[in-house]
Figure: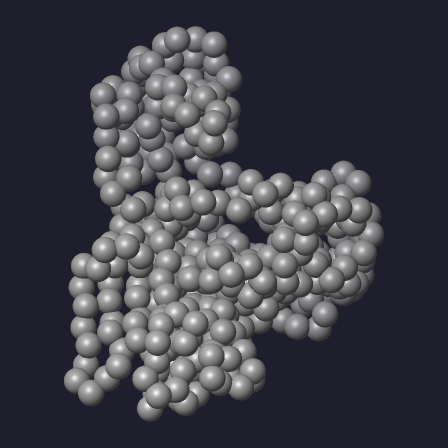
Length: 406
């Protein structure tokens, strides 16, 4: 129940921010163009709050259904307009003014996305060091000459400091199918490697990660199966497992990493698990029955424990903290916005040509779920989610489909 409440709350906040910014774009330009705005509404349906400043034609309202909004301007096609106000009616404006007013909402969303992405760079991100840990056989990276152990120092001559920064550089390169020059370093020295993304037969960044598309993954130390917390109400808590316990074996099969633990729990046919763990250097055992839960349409077994992978990676010096200054953050923010816009347009084009499923566009329920998960993952994830949603809203409202506006 709390998860549903959080999802709804963060969904309303997300939609409220995006719609307010979008409609304010219409409103601000309309007023600058000398058009009377009668109502500025966030939401549809019954009005739950209203305010009209003195000597103003505009009524500001918040309505009950937070799935959109609108700006209602003085217009002869909708009502009779007194003669003295005709010069300030929307329909009486020249084409360039009407076009500017209509385009202002979507453009405001692109502006917001660039600012939000910029904020994530200003706040700072923690990412993995840009060292190649795994190469897919016959993948583009391997065929191009990249090797396990290579540290990616530069991309097209630009300094690269983390695996996520490497993603940032590559996004638009993959879309435009360009050749990228990697500057890499390993124990044998420094060299350059050219990777031609035009050789990729099909790129599906909607369902595949950038790493999968390229065919390489970052080097990460094994995550030890040390309990960071137990999930309330799950078998591990009931059995008495505590933070700091390290899982040693499950049904006598050794557990050396978190991946081992997850694999053994999910693959076992045994109803009851014998879990051996170490607490304070002393081995102990508990018996518990995993719970079967549904995740993304798949039934999986869980015992209800979590590890602190981020802290373990920090302790192993496998991560780097990146933070940028104000100007560079904004520049990177708007670069990311342009890359995201290009990717979204490519996805929409794929849907038109039936190469992309329309299921990839989520409805309100899917958006609410993503909003809740993004907020739980931290402020940067939530800001990134808002930025992505703002780009999508801007693009959809530029399409020549009137019902999408608002």
